[in-house]
Image (cartoon, rainbow, N blue to C red; front, side, top):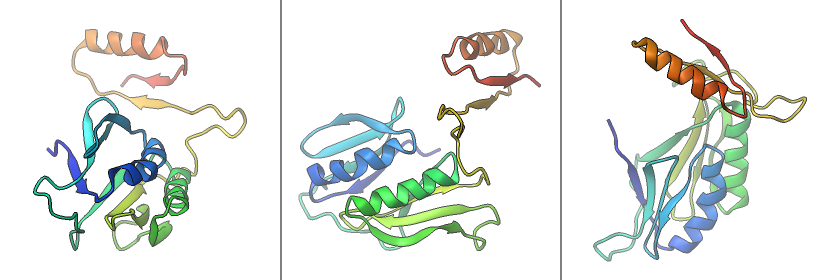
Amino acid sequence: MIHHVSLGSNDVKRARAFYDPLLSLVGLRLLKHSERSLHYGASDIIFSIETPTDGQPATVGNGVHVAFQAPDRETVRRFHSTALANGGVDEGAPDIRENYNANYYGAFVRDLDGNKIEAVTYTARESFYNRTDKRRVVSAQLTLIFPEQVRTAIDLLNSSTMRPALRVF
């Protein structure tokens, strides 16, 4: 299992202006930062932008890219357009990539330092949002072994302000 991924940058301040709005689209937020680094995640750090510790300029790895999972196709499109609006370079517009999988919908961009990043989803769902009231639609499928875990999960989900639908199998 991968703990986190780090990419190099020669200008962390500029990288933050690029990544903050982009990563918020896929559920990540800035958890920690310094003059030399940015660390993103939901609860734990999973993605970092850093100036190289050896003091040499950051360079791009040929054949390397980082893919961020998106909840729907709209988010992939927004990821791509937000990246371009913030100075990123197009490396592949949002579309089905049948050479990967018949359901693989992704978009590729290069960040301000030339690192290749992607947003991808396997769902055919256009939007994770309910078009009528703009609230986020949430569903959860839990596979749990112990009955007390099921009860705790149901209690937690039912106490949510988003009131997700839960199916217990």
